[in-house]
Amino acid sequence: MDTPPPVAFENELARVVSAQRQRVLGAGAVVRLVGTAVFLAVSVGLWLSGAQDWAHYPAMLVGYGVVVALLFALRFRPVTRQLSLVQSVVDVALVFGLQMVALPVSPFPAGVAGFSLGLFALVVALSGLELLPPLVYGTAGLATLAQAVLMREAGVGFGAVAVAAVTLFLVAAVSHYGTGRLRQLAMDLSRAEVARQLEARRTSEVEEAHRTIERMLAEAHARNAQLEAVQGHQEQLMQFLVHDLRSPLSAVTLSLSWMEQELPVGTPLVESVRTGLAVTARLDRMISDLLDVPRLEQGRLAPRKQPFPVAPLLDEVRRSLDGAARLRKIRLELASTPGLQIVGDAGLLIRVVENLATNALRYAPSGGRVRLEAGETQGLQWLAVRNDGIAIPPEARESLFDKYTQGSREKEGRRGYGLGLYFSRLAAEAHGGRLAVEDAEGWSTSFVLRLPR
Image (cartoon, rainbow, N blue to C red):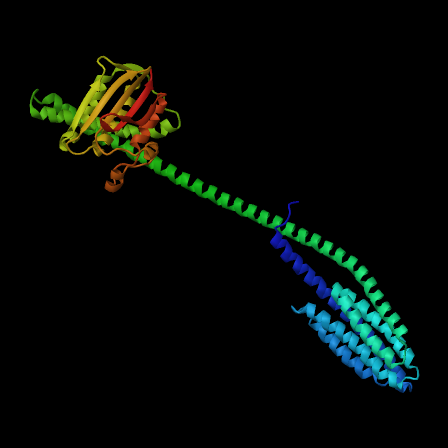
């Protein structure tokens, strides 16, 4: 068992010792009250039977009984230690007063003085119940003084007075030894009781804390389950809405395709129609991103890896974003190793590059540059999208690819839902690759997708 905290232990021990002292005071008061009642009955009986030398006892015993009853009633007050001193003084004063009154009227004054020695010894023994050694010897000294006065009043010699004094102090010593052992035993019992109470209290507190933690965990699990259910409903609703968008988008795409076939070749309108087709193709890929995120999260979307030329992929992304780039006067650049072929799912990878390029256009300054690159080195093939906008702090680079994470401009403009980069990371990992923000000379921001060869 662990040791209880010192402060708590000492406080609890002081409380138990105080309670023990109150019980001792109560027991001593009961003994005194019973003794007073017995002496009062005897003295009244003798007085009524004609023994006039007992006539003065009843009044003094009644007064003593009142004082003892008052001290008994006050035993629960904070002044219990002071009450012990008062009780001993009252005891000695009663015996001394009774015997001083009895001496002049008694035909045997020496016998009265000798009888007082037994009463004083009883008082010393009663004081030992308080478990306070100084009180025992103090009572013995006061009783010795009173006994000496009584014996000298009765004409007893100094030798008898000395023997009486020795007797009273021997009674005090015996009482001190006996009560000292009892006091040590009481202290040991008190310490054991305090330790048991503190251990029981600590066990109760630990159990209560355990129950509180379990209740909080259960509440947290319930709230988490509710949040997961709400999120599931939201994602399912989004899937339905996004899926329904494909019908009107398909109609627009068919109309633009018909216009492309019907219009004369080489006219400016044909170029606009082709731009519109590129935009609708981009919208279709964005819808596919939203639909494929749950499948990628669950590992149900396996990439169809095949070698394909990378140049047409980059050019298709450039054409789909050309209108947005020209609107902001941003120059879209392409750079790739001639004849480079990348092994992967072309449908997924073009959506990854398009997401990265869209993000780059959003953060590139007006009149700036965005470059789409591809290459291979050290057994890895890579696709990169770079821009000369504001650099991304190193501490924010990893969290960019978390779900529903948005950049500052998305938050301010309330555009996007933080799924583009998240989808791109999932698609990269599905290929066995890695998407990260890397440092590149001459560019403030570079997103690089590295794929195993």
